[in-house]
Image (cartoon, rainbow, N blue to C red; front, side, top):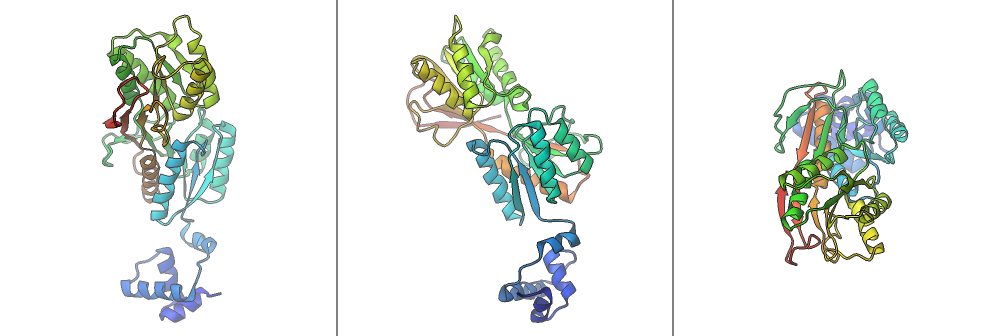
Length: 364
C-alpha cells in the first residue's frame, strides 16, 4: 500500500508539500500540485481521512437529519443536498429523527460525535432540545423546510443570495435557515377554488408546531379573506402531516352538517390520505368535491383526475442548504440568514377546470 512518503518521492517533493496539497493548508504552485496529484493517481494512494481531519479540524462531511426520507419531498431534498455536497468534495451522513424531539436530539448528537463539519436539520415540532445541543457545541447548522420558532430576526436574503436585512443572532449561536414560501402559494390555491365558485373550502393542515403548518393555515385564511369568504374554524382539521391522520381528518370534514365542496391538503402524504377518505365515502374528484394540494409529486400528473398542486423547489432547497452551510463554515460569525424560495402553481384538473395540458406559474 502506497504511503505519503512514496507519493513525495515519485513527485520529487517533500512529504510536507504532499500534505499541503491534500489538506489545502498552504498554497502550492500549480505544476507542483499537478505532479503530486499525478503521483497519487499512479500509485493508487488513499489518504488517511482520520489523520487529515486531525490536521485540518475538518472531516469534509455533512450530517443530514430529516424525517420521513421515504416522502418524495424529502427524497428530492436529499438529492439536492447530496449533489451539491459531492460537488464540493463533501460526504454525507444521514439520520432520520422520526419527528420525535428526543430522538432528534440523539441523532444530531451522534452526527456531531462523528465529527461532521456541520449539520442540516429539518427540525421537529419541538426543537428546543436539539437547538440547545447545537448551541452548546456551536455546531455549524442550517435548518431546512421548517423554521425554528421562536426564531431570531435573521437577515433576509433574496433568491439571488443577496442579504436584505439586518444582522441578528440566536444568542452566541448563529445558524441559517432555508425553506419555500408557504403562505402566498396556499392563498393562491384557495383563491383559485373560490374563483371556481366554491364557498366552503376545507383545509387538511399539517402537524401543529411546524412552521409550515402555521404559515399554510395563515395562507389559507388570507386566501379566504382575499376572496371575501367567511372563515369557519370547523373547516380546518389537522392531518398531522401523514396519510393516516389526513384520512381521519378528511372523514371528519365530510361528516359535517354542511361539508366542504372543495378541499386543500397541506402536503403530499395528506393528499393520499384525503383521497382514501373520499374513496371510502364513494365521492369522486372533482365531480363531488374539488381537490388541490400543497406539494407536487412525480405521479400527481398520473392520477385521474390530474392533481392541481403547488410545487415546492425541493431539490433547490437541498442545494441551497449546503451552500449556506459551507458559507457558515467559511465565516462562522457572519449574520444569520433565512432564505425563502418561490413555489410554482401547477394547474391541472382535480380543481374542476377543463382537461388541458398542465400550466405552471411561479408564486411566492
